[in-house]
Amino acid sequence: MSDDFGFWDVIVSIFWFTILLAWISLLIHILADIFRDDTMSGGKKALWTIFIVLIPWLGALVYIISRGDSMNQRSREAAMERMAIYESQRAPAPQVSDELQRLAELRDSGVLSPAEYEQAKAKVLA
Image (cartoon, rainbow, N blue to C red):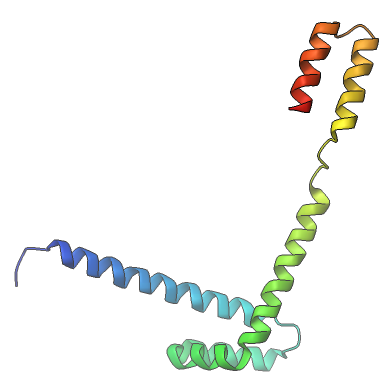
């Protein structure tokens, strides 16, 4: 056997490693979907899991063919729930009119000079 590990051997190894990572990712997504599904009973979840663990290629293929549409729907619903949580926790962006009003109050109270007010106003409007 040769001790030389050439350029194309590295490329082929990278290709197969990428395929392996994609396969692991697919199995994780399928198993997560199985346990995310509220419509399936515990027994069905166990059977699908055993099927996918014991015969992974066939199990993954059959799962995607038989439940791929509902898998997509559950994934979309989970993403929408995460987005709703994010939106509820995010602070609203200040409006330009609110910023201008706050600057005017600072100018009127003497905190900002008229020149500083004009600079800050130009920055807000830019």
